[in-house]
Image (cartoon, rainbow, N blue to C red; front, side, top):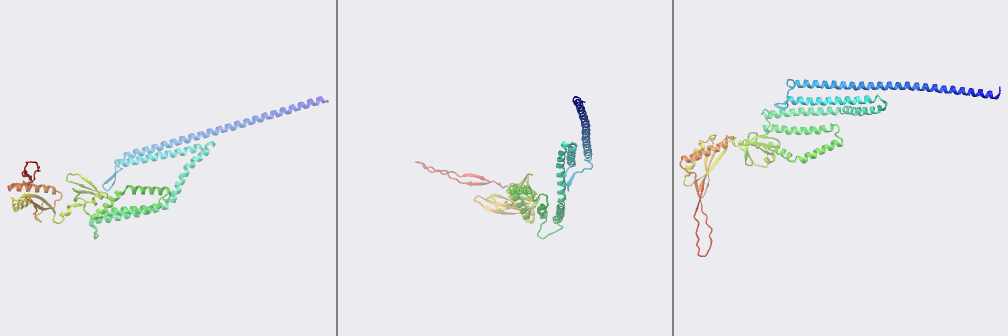
Length: 443
């Protein structure tokens, strides 16, 4: 064979080999495309499956939320229906704290809050579950779960750690509760007179109980304070200092009235129902509180006095005057010297005898208080124990005195003479002219 033939055969072999390689590459590319198509179809199937799961989770949560709301709706309707029969007003002794309607409103309010909290918690669970289905948002789901579970874990851990302190607080509160019950029992016995302590009056029982109760509450708070969670934190201590400063600056007058109220209680200048006189105001004591005292006058007006005002004022208690002989009423008149004093005494004593609500013993008596230039002053004195109507007694006494003098034919009009001189001017060829006496009537 020649060289040309060999070259042509080599070229044909090379072309055949190149064709085989090209065919192999085309086959490999087809396989790769087939594999990619299969993988792509698998991803699509995976995404479709995850999307279905997400839709199912959202539908399930929506159904659960609907069931929760339906459940709370039926409970609320049941509570409203039982408001008049099964739910009774909340009272302490005879004082109504909450009516049945107010209790129902409070229960419905807390049920509404609980419904919203459950709904929000379900939404918080739904969002991380859906995000965890996709690789792109899987880390975000972990972060959201962490934000939800970490506070819950912290709360649970702190609750477990706080349990011993909680038991201690409960024990302190129980001791305080039964100590108050014991103090209340003794105060009740003393107030009723069943328990008598030398030098301790019955009307001191409840004020002393209230004072001891406040001191016991303050002591209990001081003992419980270190066991409270966060009591050692700077924020808690700062709030405590701030409240103390506000209380000190804003309650000086209140503290003064409170201390004055304690002093008045143990001084015992009056009690509820007594008729007293404070600063020219007279009335019956209707209320004694730690800060003020209220009295009611004869015009049915209620007057309030701060305890500090009462402590710094003179107080007249008319009830203490009737414990022995009675309250001494007195009325003064003036009468000219032309009327014998014995006659005046007789008329005044007769007027006192006709006046109701007067004590027969000690008997009424008359004293002469002054001898003026033109008349004598007389004072009739008589005793009464009717504190509630002594103003009316005064009025009837005045009327009887007037009737007595009218029946005796004696005028109560007493003239009072007063002499004054006119001004004198010195002029040429003028004389002094004295003024005539001027008569001034006086009753």
